[in-house]
Amino acid sequence: MSEVKIKKLHVIETSPRGDINLVCLKVETNQPGLYGLGCATFTQRYSAVTTVINDFIAPLVTGRGVDSIHDIWQVCMSDSYWRNGPVLNNSISALDEALWDIKGKMAGMPVYELLGGKCREGIELYHHCDGRTPQEVEDNARKLMEQGYRNIRVQQGFYGGNMKGCRQDFVSPTGAPEDGTYYDPDQYFRTTVELLGYLRDKLGEKVGLCHDVHERLTPVKAIALAKELEPFHLLFLEDALPPEQADWFRHMRQQTAVPIAIGELFVNPMEYIHLIDERLIDYIRCHLSMIGGLTPAIKLAHLCEAHGIRTAWHGPFDITPVGLAAQLHLDLACSNFGIQEYCTMTELERDMFPGAPVMRNGYLYVNDKPGFGVDIDEKLATKYPAHYNDNAWLRPRLPDGTTVRG
Ligand code: MG
Image (cartoon, rainbow, N blue to C red):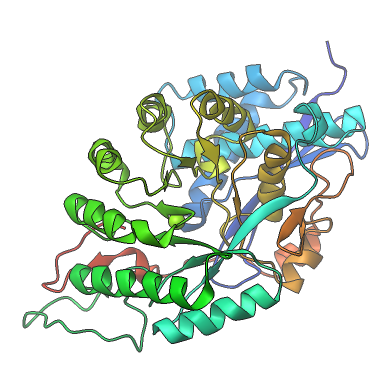
């Protein structure tokens, strides 16, 4: 039985970019100087996660030994009786990742060593690129390629093609709500097919291209888009369908060989097990903290390996460098790693999270310090407090004003 016990849970909320809230948990132990960090970032509902950690997780685990990560994970998941969901999963993820960080520090090893060791030295990544016209997307893609990026997610006019300055050919009814973000699915469909054809023609076959539909189409239109994009050899087509319509992937699979990626919205194994079992997808894209942390992600990655499916964990701005590092340690140790999403870090984020992963020549690298190798400057973090943000882009509307998801 371990002498090392959980002494205190300390949540740190911060917003170094100003418009994206990050949540990090510091788990202190009864051993001086020994602590672990975990990511609990549910950026749109950050304070709800903090409440669950402070009011329910902390009293449940304080005083327990740090050794039995799997046991503690199960205890936290079953203790609320009703399970899963983004708030509960993030609160458990924070503790789970912090315990892996502590275990690595106790062992004097990076976490990837605890997971079996490296399958590779650097982690292939893809970055994001957008623009109002195909030419603008091409220019921005070329700038990324000059910086060493080999794989790029391309969008024209943000999700649904609704970026300010983009052509909008539709008319809305008198009295249509002003709230949210309007887009026309048909226009988005047409411009996306044109964009991918244009880019493949201009950039050639050497650059990897992917695209995120962000659930902006009806199921049958999503299948039609996948078929139209097949000649352009995408790395993958992402979130062509919402989780609620995932059964449509069976039909998509029968009609096209476009690689399919989905998963950032998944919060319950029931949402992805059948997609994996039936081999309906090619990349699993869960956000680690949204499924409960590193422990369930290890199991998920292994399940995918047995079915010929690769990983592409969700990793844009709404993740702490601690959470990103947790993903990368898993990437290093999985033979069925596919590609990692990465959207760069600001200098402020690097100062706030010393030891954060770095990008060189289109590859991501973690350091070889014990645990995840990432720390936090708490004083600096408190100078940039988290706060409410209006997410109008997450309230899409069709031309007639109807609210849809995505
Ligand atoms: Mg996405």
